[in-house]
Image (cartoon, rainbow, N blue to C red):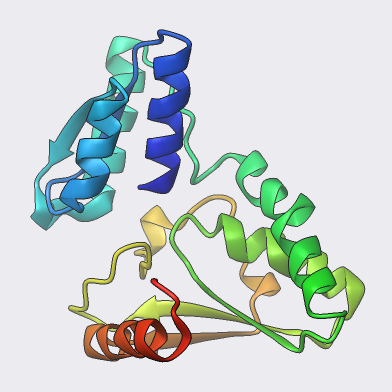
Length: 183
């Protein structure tokens, strides 16, 4: 989603060919934005999920010589959050943060922030959020073992909680109405 949009923008600026792969049930706004920046967007069957999209991309690499940036295995993913997001949270909470809760899509955010915050204070609790079975929540995944991102290190997460689609929808509305946060 967001990484694809950024890559589409950059490839458009530098006149590079870019093919982005997502499940066909991805939000139309993301797909339209990527296409507006000039990227080719390939939509894989929704029932195959993001795993199907990853398989498609890996086949393109193996059979057609494509280059895959692979945010699921690229250490720069989590390092970006180690260098930026973690220090920002530490600074903006006046070093008083006690818990950090994060969705676990590529796991880059939770890995990088956890690494940074635990260096500052090992007692900070890191909590990963995953959807309950059959829940569809954009940006949050429960990975089958075979597809668990290579950058994920379970030892950096103190607890994993499950969130239902209904709970996510209700909290999204509350965040908007009560805090002015669109999430």
